[in-house]
Length: 195
Image (cartoon, rainbow, N blue to C red; front, side, top):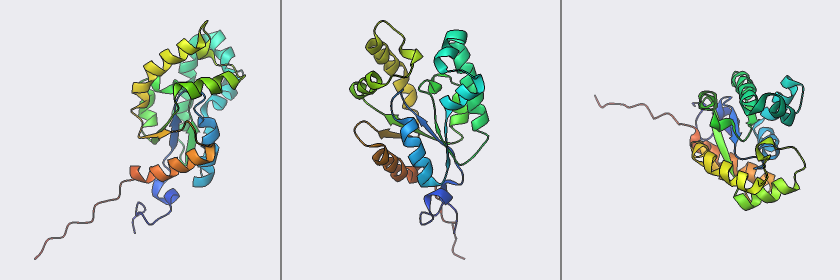
Protein backbone atom coordinates (compact mmCIF):
# COMPACT_ATOMS: atom_id res chain seq x y z
CA UNK A 1 0.00 0.00 0.00
CA UNK A 2 1.12 3.55 -0.71
CA UNK A 3 1.11 6.01 2.20
CA UNK A 4 -1.55 8.10 0.50
CA UNK A 5 -3.89 5.11 0.23
CA UNK A 6 -7.30 6.26 1.54
CA UNK A 7 -7.49 3.33 3.97
CA UNK A 8 -4.41 4.56 5.88
CA UNK A 9 -4.86 6.84 8.91
CA UNK A 10 -4.92 10.53 8.03
CA UNK A 11 -1.67 11.28 9.90
CA UNK A 12 0.22 8.73 7.78
CA UNK A 13 -1.37 9.99 4.60
CA UNK A 14 -0.29 13.57 5.40
CA UNK A 15 3.34 12.40 5.65
CA UNK A 16 4.28 15.24 8.03
CA UNK A 17 2.71 17.98 5.88
CA UNK A 18 2.33 21.14 7.98
CA UNK A 19 -1.15 22.62 8.37
CA UNK A 20 -1.24 26.44 8.34
CA UNK A 21 -4.41 28.02 9.72
CA UNK A 22 -5.12 31.43 8.20
CA UNK A 23 -7.97 33.88 8.71
CA UNK A 24 -8.84 37.15 10.37
CA UNK A 25 -7.97 37.93 13.96
CA UNK A 26 -10.50 36.24 16.28
CA UNK A 27 -11.37 33.59 13.68
CA UNK A 28 -10.39 30.85 16.14
CA UNK A 29 -7.02 29.74 14.76
CA UNK A 30 -5.35 29.59 18.20
CA UNK A 31 -8.31 27.73 19.69
CA UNK A 32 -8.94 25.22 16.90
CA UNK A 33 -5.23 24.63 16.23
CA UNK A 34 -4.40 22.68 19.42
CA UNK A 35 -7.46 20.43 18.93
CA UNK A 36 -6.48 19.75 15.34
CA UNK A 37 -2.87 19.06 16.30
CA UNK A 38 -3.96 16.68 19.05
CA UNK A 39 -6.23 14.75 16.66
CA UNK A 40 -3.39 14.38 14.15
CA UNK A 41 -0.66 13.66 16.68
CA UNK A 42 1.05 16.86 15.50
CA UNK A 43 2.66 19.69 17.46
CA UNK A 44 0.77 23.00 17.71
CA UNK A 45 2.53 26.36 17.39
CA UNK A 46 0.99 29.81 17.54
CA UNK A 47 3.11 32.00 15.25
CA UNK A 48 2.25 35.13 17.24
CA UNK A 49 3.46 33.44 20.46
CA UNK A 50 6.73 32.52 18.73
CA UNK A 51 7.09 36.12 17.52
CA UNK A 52 6.52 37.42 21.08
CA UNK A 53 9.15 35.01 22.38
CA UNK A 54 11.70 35.97 19.71
CA UNK A 55 11.08 39.71 20.17
CA UNK A 56 10.94 39.56 23.96
CA UNK A 57 7.89 41.81 24.00
CA UNK A 58 4.20 41.91 23.09
CA UNK A 59 2.91 42.34 19.56
CA UNK A 60 1.47 45.81 20.35
CA UNK A 61 4.95 46.78 21.61
CA UNK A 62 6.50 45.50 18.36
CA UNK A 63 4.02 47.63 16.38
CA UNK A 64 4.75 50.67 18.56
CA UNK A 65 8.52 50.22 18.25
CA UNK A 66 8.91 48.96 14.66
CA UNK A 67 5.57 49.62 12.96
CA UNK A 68 3.68 47.12 10.87
CA UNK A 69 6.63 46.75 8.47
CA UNK A 70 8.93 45.68 11.29
CA UNK A 71 6.35 43.24 12.59
CA UNK A 72 5.82 41.72 9.13
CA UNK A 73 9.58 41.28 8.73
CA UNK A 74 9.81 39.41 12.03
CA UNK A 75 6.70 37.38 11.15
CA UNK A 76 8.34 36.41 7.84
CA UNK A 77 11.51 35.22 9.60
CA UNK A 78 9.45 33.10 12.03
CA UNK A 79 7.42 31.56 9.18
CA UNK A 80 10.62 30.69 7.29
CA UNK A 81 11.93 28.89 10.37
CA UNK A 82 8.67 27.05 11.09
CA UNK A 83 8.41 25.87 7.48
CA UNK A 84 11.66 23.92 7.96
CA UNK A 85 9.92 21.64 10.45
CA UNK A 86 7.21 19.06 9.79
CA UNK A 87 4.11 17.66 11.49
CA UNK A 88 2.99 21.06 12.77
CA UNK A 89 -0.34 22.81 12.99
CA UNK A 90 0.49 26.53 12.90
CA UNK A 91 -1.95 29.30 13.83
CA UNK A 92 -0.72 32.23 11.75
CA UNK A 93 -1.34 35.92 12.26
CA UNK A 94 -4.29 37.37 10.36
CA UNK A 95 -2.09 39.43 8.03
CA UNK A 96 0.46 36.76 7.10
CA UNK A 97 -1.23 36.36 3.71
CA UNK A 98 -0.56 40.01 2.82
CA UNK A 99 3.15 39.40 2.22
CA UNK A 100 3.45 37.64 -1.16
CA UNK A 101 6.76 35.98 -0.23
CA UNK A 102 5.04 34.18 2.67
CA UNK A 103 3.03 32.09 0.24
CA UNK A 104 6.20 30.20 -0.74
CA UNK A 105 6.41 28.79 2.79
CA UNK A 106 2.67 28.43 3.27
CA UNK A 107 2.37 26.42 0.04
CA UNK A 108 4.86 23.87 1.37
CA UNK A 109 2.01 22.77 3.66
CA UNK A 110 -1.78 22.78 3.56
CA UNK A 111 -3.34 26.23 4.00
CA UNK A 112 -6.71 26.17 5.78
CA UNK A 113 -8.80 29.36 5.95
CA UNK A 114 -11.07 29.62 9.00
CA UNK A 115 -13.74 31.95 7.61
CA UNK A 116 -15.89 33.84 10.10
CA UNK A 117 -18.44 36.47 9.10
CA UNK A 118 -17.98 40.12 10.04
CA UNK A 119 -20.73 40.22 12.71
CA UNK A 120 -19.25 37.24 14.58
CA UNK A 121 -15.72 38.65 14.31
CA UNK A 122 -16.92 41.95 15.78
CA UNK A 123 -18.67 40.14 18.63
CA UNK A 124 -15.51 38.17 19.44
CA UNK A 125 -13.22 41.19 19.15
CA UNK A 126 -15.43 43.29 21.45
CA UNK A 127 -15.18 40.51 24.08
CA UNK A 128 -11.40 40.26 23.62
CA UNK A 129 -9.31 42.41 25.92
CA UNK A 130 -6.04 41.60 24.09
CA UNK A 131 -4.31 44.31 22.11
CA UNK A 132 -5.08 44.21 18.38
CA UNK A 133 -2.75 46.76 16.77
CA UNK A 134 -4.36 46.37 13.35
CA UNK A 135 -7.64 47.66 14.84
CA UNK A 136 -6.12 50.76 16.45
CA UNK A 137 -8.44 53.22 14.80
CA UNK A 138 -11.10 55.75 15.80
CA UNK A 139 -13.59 53.34 14.16
CA UNK A 140 -12.48 49.72 14.74
CA UNK A 141 -15.53 48.34 12.93
CA UNK A 142 -14.75 50.32 9.76
CA UNK A 143 -11.11 49.22 10.02
CA UNK A 144 -12.21 45.57 10.31
CA UNK A 145 -14.42 45.93 7.22
CA UNK A 146 -11.46 47.45 5.34
CA UNK A 147 -9.12 44.61 6.41
CA UNK A 148 -11.71 41.99 5.43
CA UNK A 149 -12.07 43.55 1.98
CA UNK A 150 -8.28 43.64 1.48
CA UNK A 151 -7.62 40.13 2.77
CA UNK A 152 -10.56 38.07 1.50
CA UNK A 153 -9.06 37.61 -2.00
CA UNK A 154 -5.85 36.45 -0.33
CA UNK A 155 -7.61 34.05 2.03
CA UNK A 156 -9.46 32.69 -1.01
CA UNK A 157 -6.11 31.29 -2.19
CA UNK A 158 -6.11 28.78 0.70
CA UNK A 159 -6.29 25.07 -0.08
CA UNK A 160 -9.37 24.69 2.12
CA UNK A 161 -12.04 27.11 3.29
CA UNK A 162 -13.81 26.11 6.51
CA UNK A 163 -16.79 28.20 7.58
CA UNK A 164 -16.06 28.58 11.26
CA UNK A 165 -18.64 31.06 12.52
CA UNK A 166 -21.11 29.19 14.69
CA UNK A 167 -19.40 25.89 15.47
CA UNK A 168 -17.56 25.03 18.65
CA UNK A 169 -13.77 24.70 18.32
CA UNK A 170 -14.17 20.90 18.47
CA UNK A 171 -16.74 20.96 15.64
CA UNK A 172 -14.53 23.20 13.51
CA UNK A 173 -11.52 20.95 14.12
CA UNK A 174 -13.63 17.98 13.00
CA UNK A 175 -14.66 19.85 9.83
CA UNK A 176 -10.98 20.47 9.02
CA UNK A 177 -10.13 16.81 9.64
CA UNK A 178 -12.96 15.71 7.36
CA UNK A 179 -11.86 18.10 4.59
CA UNK A 180 -8.11 17.36 4.67
CA UNK A 181 -8.28 14.05 2.76
CA UNK A 182 -9.44 15.97 -0.33
CA UNK A 183 -5.98 17.59 -0.45
CA UNK A 184 -4.09 14.30 -0.43
CA UNK A 185 -3.38 13.03 -3.89
CA UNK A 186 -3.78 9.29 -4.31
CA UNK A 187 -1.40 8.11 -7.03
CA UNK A 188 -2.99 6.81 -10.19
CA UNK A 189 -2.96 3.06 -10.60
CA UNK A 190 -0.10 1.97 -12.87
CA UNK A 191 -1.14 1.67 -16.48
CA UNK A 192 -0.87 -1.80 -17.89
CA UNK A 193 -0.99 -2.57 -21.54
CA UNK A 194 -2.24 -5.79 -23.02
CA UNK A 195 0.42 -7.93 -24.74
